[in-house]
Image 1: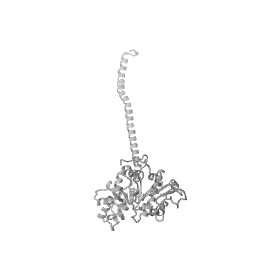
Image 2 (image 1 turned 45 degrees about the horizontal axis):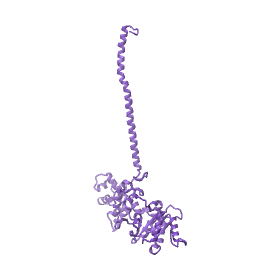
Image 3 (image 1 turned 60 degrees about the vertical axis):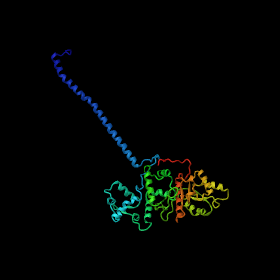
Image 4 (image 1 turned 135 degrees about the vertical axis):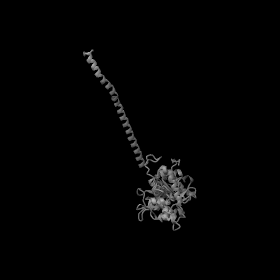
Length: 410
């Protein structure tokens, strides 16, 4: 052999080496499988990572949903969960009535109350109905039981002519969101539906996906409580006065707007007749209640000089204005035109819808009813409320020709 070994030794060596080569050939696939294991590990790692990322994203979405997503059409605006009762006021009496009729009005556990109402188990739907009853003030928790309130008893078993209606009105005025919307528009025509929808989302923070539901509950409830007058051209909320939540405690002054001392509110109204007397009895007290100084363009307020100059200075220098539209006084409408030209917030007031020009009827107008024995006190409070609202959010009271409707789909 070429390696210098004897032929026998070379052959023997060859025979010995052969298994080694065969063993090496068998081991080669095992060594080649190592990359496959590494690849498998990488693939598994990718899957685990992907699952973790997906889980994190899912958790992030859930956290965002819990915190509250921005309302559609109001980019970036945080909207809290809906607070209003999810049933109309009459429907919210169903379980309290069952407790009254089948348990003698004695407190009952939630499960017992559901059974009295014909249910078989305390499901989420029944829990939501109980929550609505509580929000209207018909039920309250008492040592783990549901107890009827006096309001519920008056609504279910009235003992006088006004018990039931009074209880329903108190319930509406106590309900979250429903009472807020009512108090804002009480004594006024409700806006046309697109404008009302805008206000519910932007001003009252009703989630946009709950607006339709809220309107159904709101409208049904105020009808049950007879807080709406639908005999006119547009539905008007009857002014039952402030509810207890909006009344200052006894001996405590009403809240005042955060304005500098001497901030003025200009009153545009006829000077003669009964309307002229409203300045001292209605408008001046309302303006002072809101924390502003009342002025109007007459000789008692302004010194001698050109009347038009006085009017111009008064309107231009005022933070808010009040316009009494009753009788369609031409001087009042002239002053109103100046105020609108200056884009000043104006509180519009009238004793009737007919004296409100057609092109102003889409704006909020306070309508007062002189046949109501308490109309004067209610009007003072309402005007004061609207002045404070105009200070905090003047856009609602400014007449703009370019103001569009952003949610016409409703």
